Image 1: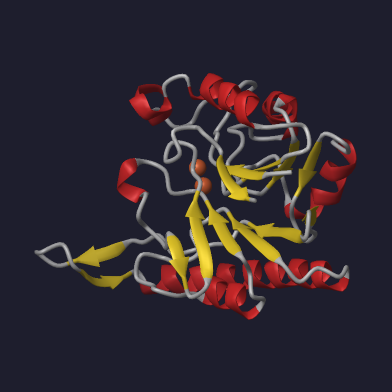
Image 2 (image 1 turned 30 degrees about the vertical axis):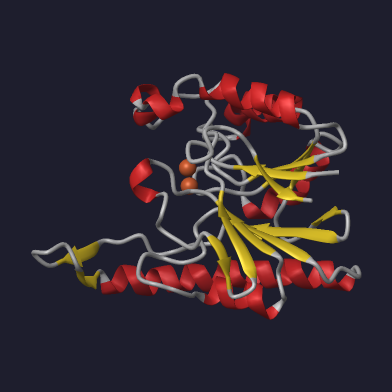
Length: 248
Ligand SMILES: [Fe+2]
Ligand SMILES: [Fe+2]
């Protein structure tokens, strides 16, 4: 019973693709077919696949429905996290989505998904992405202060959601956690963040995130082992559209 993850499929079966890069970047060529073939090759029915946000360019559920149907057609149990582009999914409507797709897809928000001894817990997360101001040598000399303050509020809200989810898993008897965030856990200026602190507080086994796609952004945040937790970037183009195995 293995656990895999991949993010940022940015499907558009029922909507318009809003990122021209997807059409021109060789890393994205045939990406839907590649994801499908790779999933069919590696995933068994008892395995779990977490899709770490930015599933669909659809602006509502009607437009996103064909994309969700594609994800549902992949092998294994599918768990979905909210990304910043998932307009079909309002936080308050998560229970409704779970009822609508019961037995086909699980929407991870203010809840948890059991995977063996582990509880899978997640939220969109947030991190400040600029603008940063650079000196002549390209070093960061400052940033947009009001934007940064606004970002901190969003971080607090996402942190509260993640803590609630961890508490619901703990109340159900779980003490091993894998945390999923759509945004990277740290911004470009940070070594640690409120999210890495929370992961450490609960003794999380892994932190898994996406959102950073395009070669220039692959090293925006932590990867590998850091303070007893393993951090993984799983954006699809970074993985070459092959889901990353997280367990066993
Ligand atoms: Fe994305
Ligand atoms: Fe994103």
